[in-house]
Length: 268
Image 1 (cartoon, rainbow, N blue to C red):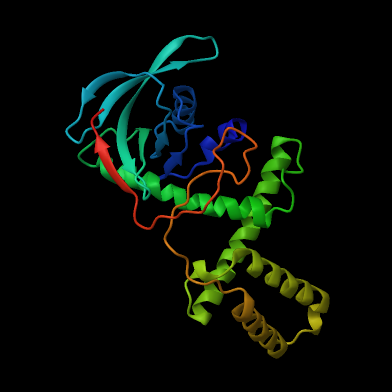
Image 2: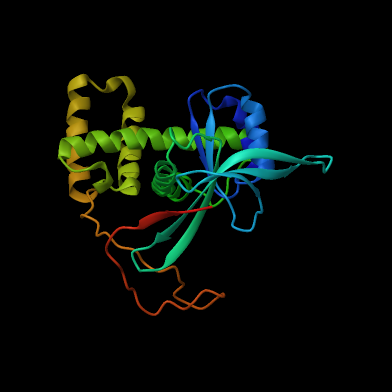
């Protein structure tokens, strides 16, 4: 991921807020990104491990702080990157607390409130559901078939394009069936769409506009009968395994908790 990301930094469009997880929350990676962007209007917000030490330069009114982050280059020369650090403590719906730590290049605490940035990162977790669909549903194998970065990029691009097509059909089908797009099963919709596309590909020019319209209506009838999911409960389940094959605790029941995750900023 780091090798692919290094080649993508320069291609990030202007006006972007790049949000990264802890894999990218290191001084060296963030300096590499900012050097690639230069003076362009691109900023970042990255989650950081708790054990990385920084030097606090200035504490800001909203609880965040301007910090100097140590960076070591290829020659092992120690340099510093000036960033803004934000910390927050959250309470999950099951009552357990957790701590989050971020670095951002948005140094102005009046224009960019720490709470707004923290909640913007939380929105990123919704994207993880999409990544799951991309890896488990769209992709047919556990790993990429490519053996080089160039072909891996092509394979990933094809997966993203396929998922974008399914997402568009998901929205259109949901609108016609009067249900939210999330109620449309991604995997079942993908299977039904693949069958429709194969039929259109084989028929080719034999299909008239009237026949295509009939096929689309039949497709929606099929989707209505077996691709619409029931409404999901708001719940949070503990992370555990059903069988004790590792250090994770054994999962003997299935408790769930309903509610919202709360987040409170703490002073750096």
